[in-house]
Every structure is written in C-alpha cells, then in structure tokens.
Amino acid sequence: MSHHKVVVIGTGPAGYTAALYTSRANLAPLVFEGVQPGGQLTITTEVENFPGFRNGIAGPALMDEMREQVLRFGTTIKAETVLKADLQSRPFKLTTDQGEYTADAVIIATGASAKWLGIGKDEQLSRSGGGVSACATCDGFFFRGKEIAVVGGGDTAVEEATFLTKFASKVHLIHRRDKLRASKAMQDRALQNEKIHPIWNKGVLDVLTTTLETPMGEKIEKIRALKLQDTVDGSISELAVEGLFVAIGHQPNTGLFTGQLPMDETGYLQVEKGSSRTPIEGVFACGDVQDHTYRQAITAAGSGCMAAIDAERWLTEKGLAE
Ligand code: NDP
Image 1 (tube, helix red, strand yellow):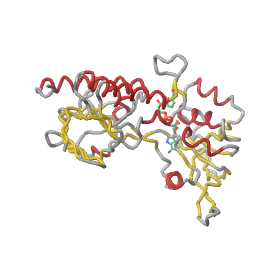
Image 2 (spheres, helix red, strand yellow; image 1 turned 180 degrees about the vertical axis):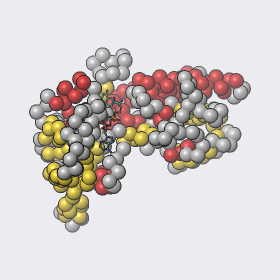
Image 3 (cartoon, helix red, strand yellow; image 1 turned 45 degrees about the horizontal axis):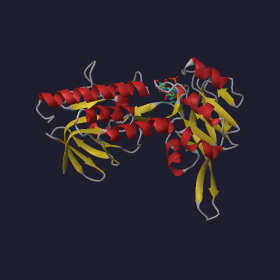
Image 4 (tube, helix red, strand yellow; image 1 turned 180 degrees about the horizontal axis):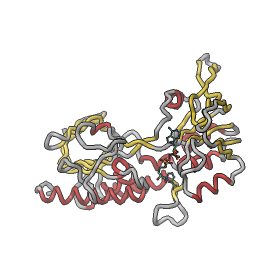
C-alpha cells in the first residue's frame, strides 16, 4: 500500500489546479484520473470564457495544457478510479480499481455527471449505441444528415444544438417551458440558426425504437421517435428522430462519500463557507462536486487552488508536510 501526503481525486480544472498548487508546494500529490480523464471539459467544444485565451480554446486542449503543467512540477497521475474511500481511518484509505493507497490529506474533485431523463430508455440506448447521447462533441459525427433532437433549455442544450447543426439536417430543441434558461447571446445564436427548430412546452415521455439487423445478424435497438407530452395541455404527440441528445444538467459524483460527508438535498458536498474544508479534518472538496451555483471551469479552478492551500496549511499545522 503506497502512502502519499496528498491524494487528489479527479482531473477536471479543480483537480488539476489542486495538483498544481500542492506540487509546487513540494507535496508530491498523487492524482487519480477517474472514469472521465480531464472531466467535463473534454466533452465540450470551444471554451471562450477561460481567461488567458483571447481566441478561445478547445475543451480537450485546455485540459491537456493543465495536465502537462501539473506533470512539470512533480505530480503523479494514475489512470485509476477510486472505488472506496475510507475517511474514518488515519491515514485515509483509498481503494482503486487497481490498488490500495493511504493519504494524510484528500482533495475531492470528482465533479458532476450528465443527468438522464429518468425514463430508463434514454440511458439504456446511450450505452448500447442506440442513438442517444449526452455528449454532442463525442457523438455528433454519427448523425450526419439526420434529423435529431436535443432536450433541455440551458447553456449546454443550446450549445449542443448549435454544434450539432454541423452534422444533422435538422435539430429539434425540446424544452419543457416556453423560455430558455441559456444566456441571451447563446440563445440568439441558436434561434437564428435555420437548422434549429425549437419545440416549446414539451416533455419527453418515452423513446420509441425499432430493431435493426446488422449484416452480421446482430440485432440492434435504435431510436426512431420520441413520445412527447405537452406540459400545458397534456396532449401527446410523436416526433420522428434518429438521434437524441440529453442536455438537462448534471449530478455531483458523490456516491463514494455517502454516509461519510454531509451533502445537500441534491447530493452536492457541503464545505465550510469561504473554504474547501469538509467536516472531516484533512478532507477538502473543490469544483463542481461542491458547487451547484457557478459550475464554471474558472470557478472550479479557483476552488482547486483554495483546496490546495487549505490542505497545505492543514498538513503543516499537523507536522505532516515535511
Ligand atoms: P442547467 O441546469 O443550467 O439547465 C438544465 C436545463 O434542462 C434547464 O433548461 C431545465 O429546464 C432542463 N431540465 C432539467 N431537468 C429536466 C427534465 N427532467 N426534463 C426536461 N428538461 C429538464 O444545466 P446546463 O448543463 O445547461 O448548464 C450548467 C451550467 O454550466 C450553467 O451554469 C451554464 O451556464 C454552464 N454552461 C456554460 C457554457 C458556456 O458558457 N459555454 C456551456 C454549458 C454550460 P428548466 O429551465 O425548466 O429548469
């Protein structure tokens, strides 16, 4: 079992910034990448609001830069996923898919993941390649020339719908209200796009499928239409589409800490106001896993810096930094 002064869980902007600051403080952090190395920005397109890139930068490129930067200062990155975190023992014990580790301090930067509609079929088809996805950047290419739908009314939905017009022949933007939540600039850009067709006041009740047979004789279930319900008059309708992108927000990745750390009603970790400290001394949280308000790359990075400084001060206070 290898021991480390600081373990960082997660490699989004929060995790990398925590690693940057702790490595530059000579704490030689160990970072676990998790199931989505680089975090949510690796599945986004252009990032235009991260300071320092006046022409914008692609999400994956920004994360590559952050990764190289932390490696330069002596961070160890492991392509492992933490499966169990024992925060009651000292040092803390972490079990990954490949080994066991101990740590004096733990920085949680596990972020958040895309939400599904709660109808089962959408998530199931996304796993089986049935034409449903929560990532336009990853899967948009498969829908060249096809008529598809995006569900949601926030920045993600509008951004994804706009991006998908590069491939699809038509993009229906389905929203459960008659007003988008997305920022005005992004809304204007999307609604002026001829390929985007907004559908207001509709919820997705079901994903209807058809079964196709591949040349190898394999049967695959593919989306053929959506069953929609009007949120005002309750009427039911069908919309024929060959693809569905679900963009209705995210949920924090806090399952590892259930019963160990306090969470709010939606599962976000709670930290001491104005700091990254959790109620367990030596455990710090940063980024989207503890922030349902701002959820920006820059705020995640800022809170990663706070967690690193909090961890360093705590380790020094306890005589564990040397
Ligand atoms: P949001 O929480 O902002 O929006 C979620 C959208 O999905 C809302 O319109 C909501 O409807 C709708 N929704 C939620 N649940 C359901 C459901 N079960 N069925 C149908 N619709 C549903 O999430 P986003 O991912 O869009 O954005 C998260 C954060 O990231 C925001 O702060 C955003 O500004 C930021 N962001 C910034 C980007 C950029 O600047 N380039 C790009 C992407 C995101 P309702 O409106 O009725 O609540």
